[in-house]
Amino acid sequence: MYATISLVGIVLGLILLILMAYKGHSIIWVAPLCAIIVAVLSGLNILDAYLGDYIKGTAEYIISWFPAFFLGAVYGKIMDMTGSARSLANKVVSLIGPKFAVAAVVIPSLLMTYGGISLFVVVFVIYPMGYAIYREANLPRTLLPGAIAFGAFGVTMTAIPGTPQIQNIIPTTYYGTTATAAPLMSIVAAILIAVPGYIYLEWRCRQARKKGLGFVEDSKYVETNNDEVKLPSWHWLSGLLPLIVVVLMLNVLPKLLADAGIVEWSSSQAIVVALVGGIVVACLMNIKQFKILLPAINQGSNGSLLAIMNTACAVGFGSVIKVVPGFALLKKAMLNMPGNILFSEAVAVNVLAGATGSASGGMSIALEALAPQYLEKALDLGMNPELLHRVASLASGGLDTLPHNGAVLTLLAVSNCKHKESYIDVCVTSCIIPVVVSLLLSLIWGLFI
Image (tube, rainbow, N blue to C red; front, side):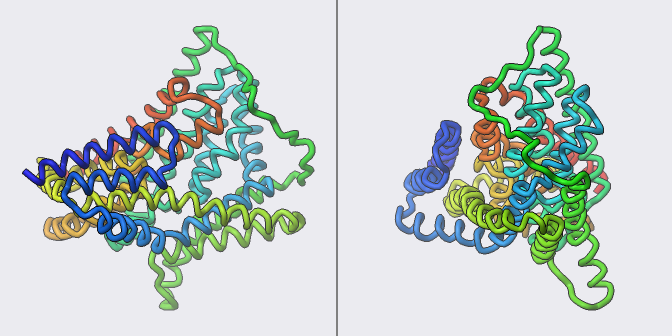
């Protein structure tokens, strides 16, 4: 009986969290409020739940992942303020042209996220460029958020082997894997997400043209006069080389050092070294803009605090859920789900990522509670833990992009678009397709275990 009431409390807490975040309220106070509701309906002491389970879960996440958030934000801000990221994006656009407007927005987004730049930074960098492209192509501005989300929140965040995004690093802690885990599954997943997503976005553009819909200026947006920024013709390389350095230092350098018997790094250590390498290279390539570098580091440092707090608060909410009786019912249902453990993990991570509105937060909660059992079962079956890693990463990038997701709210705010205008495209490309792919792949792959 108590477990059932507790389960109801979990559902009510999740619904309230989604609604409040959807309306734009800060998760920093909404998450503990919803956690208290869950605690009360589960018979827990409010102060114990808040000062104990909630704060502990929030703090542990910050302790574990602050270096990655901090360095990633600094790296992204340097790439942004020096014009490096914009120069790379403009170079890609010059090669593709506005005729292929969707590709001209998606490809730079993919490159930047695979190079380790924060999703939030990518949104701010790509929107001005996408705005100009869609205006020249005479496409509705409301279609732009879908293209940005597809490039930034999807394929290179979770699927491409070796991506330095935190959603690909977290599973390494639980499964002893590396960022390149399960490369075959990764590549298959990337294709299955990328192809239908791109086809959908192009279809939306064709439908808009058939209906006679064109570009409408955003009255709140003020374009920057790029002519005022006098950068050398090679400057696009300052946008590309740091990305390459980050990827190589994350995926190649640790293996070389380990093989030479010099040192062995965990993935969480390697991401720190890789991001520092990216920062150093970005600073050296923009040394003539040294007056911008310190302000960029300051802004990136400050921005990292809000980014990690939003995610950590979602994890804190999940930490309360994890200790109430109702969660035991959910955990039992997940572990005893028909099918295989890959499918079970995909469902669990999707559900919790959707509940918290955070890919990394929901995945952390799911793996903290269930990874030991999944790993034990995998070893008993002779399954490579890399498959568990990749499924967890893929699943984290599905239901996390429900309307209350922080990155979605930021994207729509920057684009000055409402949910009813643009969220459908974000949902299809960054939620529905990844969910289907993560569930389908886990189910099919599990048949051959």
